[in-house]
Image 1 (cartoon, rainbow, N blue to C red):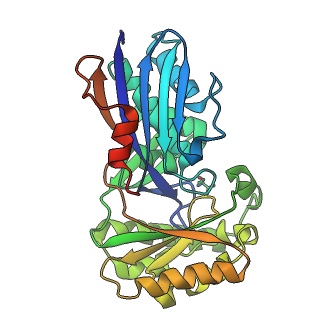
Image 2 (cartoon, rainbow, N blue to C red; image 1 turned 180 degrees about the horizontal axis):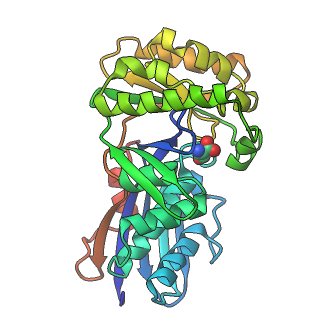
Length: 326
Ligand code: HSE
């Protein structure tokens, strides 16, 4: 059993869809959440950072709940948990914060009891909760993932991100619930639009797998969700239409939004121009937005196992201070 044991997990943020690959493609990004979990006598929470201020500190907490799912699945009982979490992933912005919490909680709980569940089982359980595999797959496996979910199992392929690819995210100040951004998508689409998306999603997958950055712009176009979601994100239509003229290889709504994500060649000379174009265009539409340069994250959720004696004399907060960039 897990007496006295504690584990720490570092889990990346993610972007889903990459334009046409709705509910299928995902990429892990270099923004992180850290979770520490240990068995205790009375459940308690230590949640740090601005993103954590409204997160529940009782057994309705998502991390606590997903940990209990893992224990139930493994047939063990660990009712009381001490959970610490720090996250730099903005909430409800389309950067996979809930997926990273689900994956971080599940991976930590599994590690705490000696890892009886496979990553594949965790992936299925996490996808069943999220209802789509794109964000959770990227946070769990890292890199780029393509996944298909049949309602109980997700098949997945992981692609190593091209060396020269980096990302610029534009994070608007306002939040957008995924449920609201899914409601605006029509329940059926024409065969022409389906073909439009299948062909581009396939092309994008191949382009990313083979490092064909030149194809990314054409391949990231979408007719399944972005045209309908554009009304929810002022400035998005203009940004999607023109970003490639300012140095982006391609651009998309990140997941359900409202964040936009531009992919850029690392050697691109117009990075400053692109950043200014994106923020100014959003501002012209009344939206204040923060930009961040991010890297594709090649590793998924990483576990560090500790016991009370063997643990480096480093508290969770000291560890975070050492890891967080600014
Ligand atoms: N594929 C999902 C969507 C991602 O676009 O609704 C949500 O995080």
